[in-house]
Image (cartoon, rainbow, N blue to C red; front, side, top):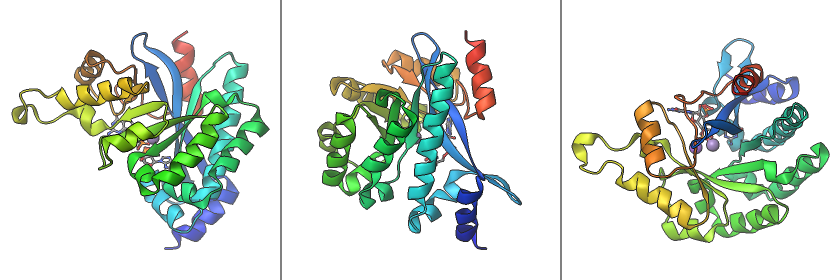
Length: 255
Ligand code: G
Ligand code: G
Ligand code: MN
Ligand code: NA
């Protein structure tokens, strides 16, 4: 079926929706920010997850207008939250395809300028695999965005095959530790199940990055990531991705 042409319509018809997953400061339990996660409200199929349409959007280049829309939507939402007294850091996932088109810097800075959100409140997330694909070009665009105050995160770190030196040479602000490291090896296979998690956390801190543990699903995992010194966390045990109204309700509870 013609998911691509339907997606073209969807982008125009505002069938895309954003869910917001809280980012929690682990020492205090405060929600300090959120990650924008795209969904497609399909008229027949219901809520379609990004894994079912982002790869197609990347193939035909639609990911670029979709991400432009997402940046505008996210920053507009951030303005609304700021007006309600909530100064949140908002994170948006960026595709390697977008990096390779060369329009990312203008797209991001344009949305920042139009909405008036302080650039420090925006984090762009790129996976280590995406960064490794064209690391010189990525570094160039990173430098341009960072010089304007936009923050950068290396997403899903520990899931791919990039080298430690490539991480050290990228000027990123946040290291997002992949959920496979948070889940850890099967205890039966390791006498020191936290060794890799601890080492990756120490690496991030040594490189002056904020370390954020992803995919925290249980109280035990929360205890582990705190014990190794992760500063921030995300995951279903803390809060799942939520529609804007439920995200706002959660923030209201915490105050
Ligand atoms: O939202 P999760 O719930 O299902 O997302 C699945 C995957 O889709 C994740 O790897 C996430 O990074 C990616 N994803 C979600 N929203 C976006 C987006 O707006 N752009 C890109 N490039 N990836 C996204
Ligand atoms: O951008 P990234 O690949 O990190 O995307 C975050 C993805 O992780 C989204 O698909 C989101 O729905 C998902 N996610 C968020 N919290 C959890 C969790 O606790 N467990 C698992 N398995 N997935 C999660
Ligand atoms: Mn992400
Ligand atoms: Na991630």
